[in-house]
Image 1 (cartoon, helix red, strand yellow):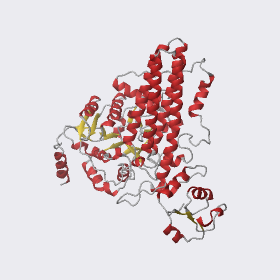
Image 2: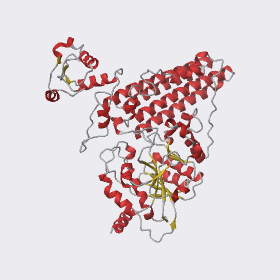
Image 3: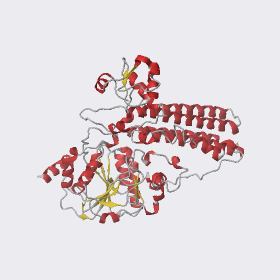
Image 4: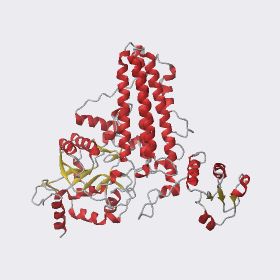
Length: 570
């Protein structure tokens, strides 16, 4: 009965039975549900074949994947087959890209697809991977074989006890598929991804080497001493920043074993394009010493240890990283920083060329800046399309992280167009380009750096507001941000919490009342000074320094009364 029901489902989707087809030992399988992921997947499949993988490769696609994408997947040697989408059973889907994530379960129906042989084993790979060694040896491993996870919610220095589903050795089985479908709704996923279900089903699994068979690209930064490309079989680019959304110029200065640089090299080999990676160049000795390499690095990355913007998010950085929306801010900010540095380097090269009598190359420098900004702006748009749902939340009057990012990028675009316009006018007037082009581009780089700092500052205000808000969703008691809200610890030197609390109290409307638990007179004094109508209720005696606010500080209030008549507890 199960087989008849399953066969009917495939027939309804345009398939017929597959009995009597030949048996093959193994296959490599991947799943594509959107067109924007095709470039990543095609490069993954091409790299698998280039690395010596000989088994058949199958790309399952949904109806949303267009003809051009299917042709691209077929051009790298994959059998492209359409499969029905599996509905996501979760109320909350944090990342829109997870909407059709449960379609991955279709890989267990591999032997029911018409036109393909029967497979005794298969190796599944996510499309955001790069293969460096043959996958064939994995076919000899049992179901389910996978590598331990290395995720943002875990320690970056050790592997998590759960497996990462980006690479799995499995046995195609319609019964396994049916079992997972029957239990999908019973295994909740806080992110909306399918991985918790897979972990719940396959509790007894064979561990692969997570520093060889499914190496998280973040290990390059966090486990640098263990990063050995020569022994890696595959690299996994987890998180929203997929390599096919980036441009190789972002990794010009990266070492040759940088994961994104490795991916772009493989991508160019697939396209049969030889990309000219520029050799690092020293700034010309005749350029003023203020622009020497050391000063240059100080300007862009030499922030002090006590700088609120140091390395991205300043005080409480680890807490911000727990929020899914941190990705869009982090990567959008980093892209601006890379663009600013590129503009400064272009300015230096143009000056050097002029000093050597080749000022005619000025127009090429302007084109390079224009193209660099176009790539950076497109990268931001891709991030916005694939970001998490919390990045679109606006509370207490603070713009959402996505809106903040868009506003800053719009301003940078205006600055770029203005700088290019001024430079083009000077070129048309045939002025000496030796100084004005360098001056204009160096000034643009400085303005972009200022905007990048502004982005981080404004976005972390928005993120603080989101993290201190209980965001409820219909039919779901808790939400993915509850754990963050309950554990958030603010550094007392950071004023963002004051700004957010002030906005929160103001948004509640008059009468402005606030119940305070704990000993933090500086925050309370700040709020009282900013809101003349605010009345603060305390369960105990008022802390020193609040006496001057008189009747606006009410002490000795019971907890029941405090909770019943005030906005909340701080």
